[in-house]
Image (tube, rainbow, N blue to C red; front, side):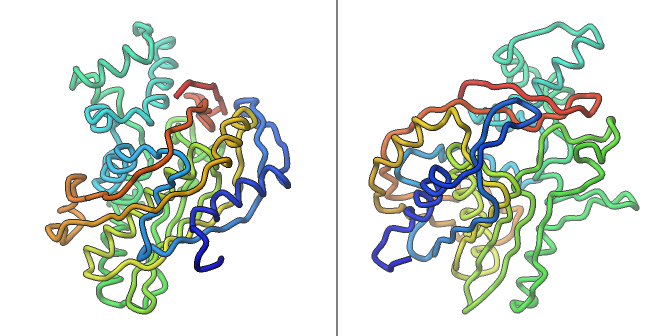
Length: 328
C-alpha cells in the first residue's frame, strides 16, 4: 500500500474485490445468500492512528463495553444491557424462548426479555448467561482437572518475561462445545467467529494478529477491527510498550446479499483521518482495565448506514443449526 494512501482503503478494496470476484453461497442454517472469498488479510499500523473506520460511523460504545466484557471474563449479557449495548441480546433470548416451550414459561418479546434482564437480577442470573463464549474462554478455559485456565493472563506474562516469544496465543475454539461435535447439553449456542489471536513483539512494539474464520464485511468487520486494535493497545499499555500492527486474517470473508445497496453507499464515501486512542497509565494489569480508562479523540466519521443483521449459526437446545433475521 502506498504510504500516502489512507489505510481504510484496504477495507474498501476488499469490499470491492468481494463485489467483483465473490462466490455466491446460501447458508444452510438461515437460508440467506452470502458472497464471499477465502483467505484474505488487511493490516494497520496502530502508531499511525486508530483504525475505527470513517466511511460509516462504527458503534464505539459497543466496541468498548464488549471488549471490557471479554477482558473481565464475563458471560452474562446483563453487564452489556446495563450499559445500553444490545449486540448480544438475540442468543440468550432465543435459548429462553426454546426453553419456554418445553418448561411452560411465559413467552415474551425480545424487548420484554431484555427489560427483565436489566431489572431483575435473579432472571438475569438464570437466563442471561451464554456459556463458552469469548471472555470465559480467554480467562477461564475449562481444563480436564476442573481448573479455569487464564490464557490471556498467561500471554501477558509470556510477553513480559520473554519478548521474543512465539507462543502468545489465545484461542476460543474448543470442539467440545461446538456444532455437532458437542453434546446437546454442552453446546455453545453462539458460533465462535473470531476464534484465535496471537500477540508478538517486533522492533520493541506489540502487534496482534486475529484469525477470524467467518467475517461479515459490512456489519461485523469494522467492529472487529476496532475491538482487536483496542485489545492490542490495552496489552501494550499493560506491558509498558508501544503498539505495532493489527493484522486481520480472514477465513471466509463475505457480505450478505441484502447488504448490497448499503455497501454501494459506503463505497461512494472518502475516508477521513483516523482518530487516536490513549489508555490511562492507571492500567498496569488486566484487572485494572475499565472502559473509562480509554480515551478516543478526533473521530469524525461519515454518518452510520443501517442494514439488517443476520443471527447466524445459532444452535438450538437439541444442537441443531437454526437462524433468523433481526433488524438492527
